[in-house]
Image (cartoon, rainbow, N blue to C red; front, side, top):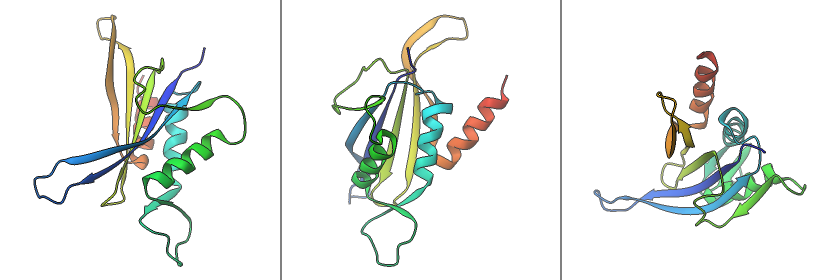
Length: 158
């Protein structure tokens, strides 16, 4: 059995009011059947996200890989990971809470700043006392580049 994961792309933006809350729009939920752990899918996801930049409109002078907003990023992400082969990756309803995933990744795309934030959660874990805890806990939140540092520190820790 593989290490399953869910990856969600979420567009965020702050309202116009100074005290407005951040609004969120869930664009896509992608399920990965295996290699969903941080040094597998998390690393591959961070590499993909670092390969481009978010823009609002495609300019004539734009060079390199660009994501024209969260929807474009989500479509490119699915295409990148799925390729043209059967199995491995699937699209799930955005209402999916439990797909048996051991890890969950949220890719937040800020509409205003064009910044990408990655969040990695672990679903279920062993406590320090050795008991299994069936709750989600956040392992990481930051930029895709910062995720590389997180993985490096994690691999150096015995």
